[in-house]
Amino acid sequence: MKIFQAGGLSRLFNYAKGYRKDIYLATFYSFINTLFYILPEVLIGMAVDVVVYRKESLLGRLGVPNLYHQLIILGVLTLIVWIVLSVSEFLYSSKWRNLAQQIQHQLRIDAYTHVQDADMTYFENASDGNIVTILNDDINQLERFFDNGINIMVHIISSLLIVGTLFFILAPKVAIWAFLPMPFILYGAYYVQYIIGPKYEMVRTKAGELNNRFMNNMLGIATIKSYAAEEYELNSLELKSGEYLKANAAAIRISAAITPIIRLAVMLGFLATMMYGGWLVLQGQLTISVYSILILLSQHLLWPLTYLPDVSDQFYRAMASIKRIMNLLSVPIYITSGGHAPPSTGILGAISLENLSYTYNKENKKVLNNLNLIIPSGHTVGFVGSTGTGKSTLVKLLLRFYDPTSGVIKLDGKNLKEYDLETLRRNIGYVSQDVFLFNDSIAANIAYGTFDATQEQIEQAAKLAEAHEFIMSLPQGYKTKIGERGQKLSGGQKQRLSIARAMLKNPPILILDEATSSMDNETEAAIQQSIWNITGGRTIIIIAHRLNAVRQADVIYVLENGAVIEQGDHDTLVEKADGMYAWLWQLQTGAVY
Image 1 (spheres, one colour):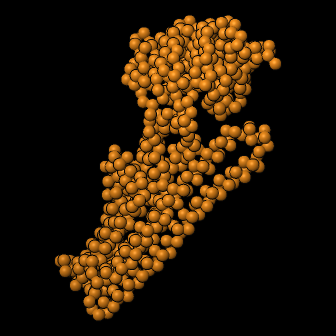
Image 2 (image 1 turned 180 degrees about the vertical axis):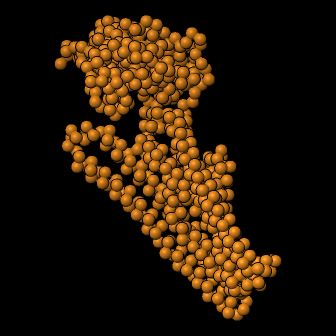
Image 3 (image 1 turned 90 degrees about the vertical axis):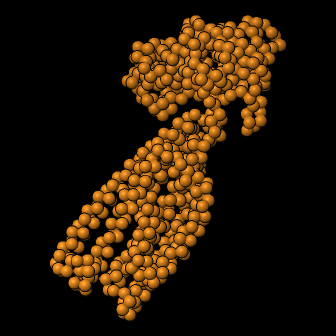
């Protein structure tokens, strides 16, 4: 079946190798429960046999002539059947539910781990809302399927096998007529798969788009309000919700249509058993007790098929979710960790770029073009230039968010790719213009990445970042919750917390990417002085548009079209009257109008 080949149940079963014994055991419990669920009908037939044929009943012929003893035996057997039925129901229910929770948990952790390992290019092209939908809603679809759907599937298959066998043993002629609708039912279910499977894939896709819209609106609520765009966003959301509604409606029409068709087929099978079996009894070719058993068993033979629409609905929804989850787990990981650990002396911070180029594949645009430069350990360098010249891309290459298209970045003389990825990033403090803060306390946000920091160390880092004073003015000080993405703070306050976080990390390499862009001049000057105070032995890379931020750097590189067009210290570059840096300096200081 296409959906299996595309990554359905077989892919999930391959993934859940470690749970196969539990799956087999749960299936066995479901089978036993189905078997004993059928046996009461057989016992009823035997009771009819005792009442009608008395000493000539089956039990009588087996050596129990006393009718009361026969009834007692039937009573004991009935008690045993119902005890086993109850115990097996408890066993399969708890087993399937626990399996659902365990597989759901493991799948979510594995999927999230895999997503975390994906390179930044994937996140730039993927939808955050769609990823969250897969990690949450799609995996929850599997939980519902494991909780109930699989057991119903086992029940249907087991009923067909057990009851079908009994039918052919007791009355082969009746069995043929009872089974007559079966091929049409199974073929219909098989055919519906090709129609409804893609529709449920569309349902999951539309659910991801809707979730993405919700996320974007919640994150951008301030912008929505400031532009009085509430009605526009409501209409956009209504449109996305309508698409989700239509996708579900298309699937529902098909899944709902199959139920009355199956019921009609079930009725025909039951009718054939009742009429033809009754005729055989009247002809003396079938006993009343066997006829009673067949009538009762026909419910177990065909009636479970009425659950087929519901279980099919769960199944196809689950298969659509499995495909999306497995596709997420199949996202290629391009940025892999090297095995090289830093020497016992630690990373010194000497960086060299050798013929470094980077091209964004999507736009085929070369952002960095054959860069060659050396940043000695313990030096402070600045990168300036107009927007889009590759300054931030260079930082992302240093952090190995991307790998170079060509050329090499070396750290302490070794290719960056040779380093253990986690160790590399732990030795780099990164402060970006786009600050991300968590919905937690100020102290927890500063200590993020340095989780064992003491309160004294947190406060010291905040003082270096000129953040301590404003933190202490808050009602709860360092315990103050700052809201989603730090929305209770100003842009400058958020940047100061981000700088404090990097300073607490105390890395040998510190990268500041427009780290003071949202601050007033006085605060910026104070933070810059703090940075200069901690430069000893530390390699610092500053990316800035405001040249005051790089004025004291040992070397300043001016980038244009991905290449270095000027380099030198501040005084040297300012003296080049026809240089870009000099022109930018004059523009920012008011000398050019």
